[in-house]
Length: 292
Image: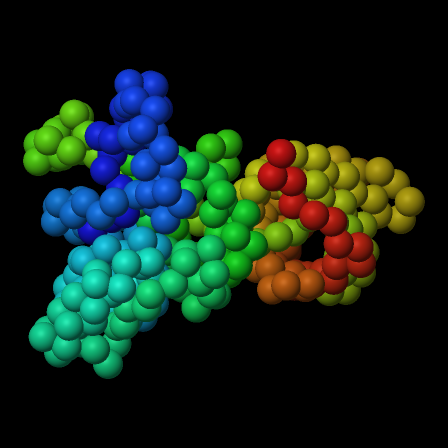
């Protein structure tokens, strides 16, 4: 599949390549590096790990020979698009789509990955060098909708921690990387909930909730109701889903719901667990999500 030789990347990282070779590799790194195929077993595991199905639109950045998008369409009936800077690989991939009779569902375009529109993806796949991963991180986080699954082979987004990861033996990789294993990382793109929210519970209570967010983690939260300070507990964001608890003199209210841009809504279980009410919230002050 991909846009680099991991063996060359490892040598480059430890400084074992001479100055002339480094100068050549600098040009390659701008587009992710030279093309090296990904073993089919890794492709299949990436798609399985990303829970790809017929409803998905898979975008592969640095698509090489197109194997991930082609396999997603052939094995899972998904749609998709591959993006690569190499015109010959793009032509080869589109020819393969025609050959397999899936060109109505998948396509490949010659484009710098940093200029690609990612907003249509429900699954994003990558196998790019660490520097490229880090440079793409803010774009991926900003452009993808909450709930989109991101699956990367071997390399990650630094301190944007993955939600899940798996490792498995791939003997044929040893000739490329020197290590006969692959590691896959998966992220579920979180809703951006940083800021201040006014929560209204059907039939009565109103709360003011403030959240500070770093990627999918809520790093600070506070709340008030009727001028009384409350301490939110167990605040969690996974994709578009949010849950948290608010404790007051009446007990603990357990909120769960979905985020849709500037609004949230869901159900709240009041103290004692005997009453369920609807709640909704509107953001009254936006705040950036920290990536530092």
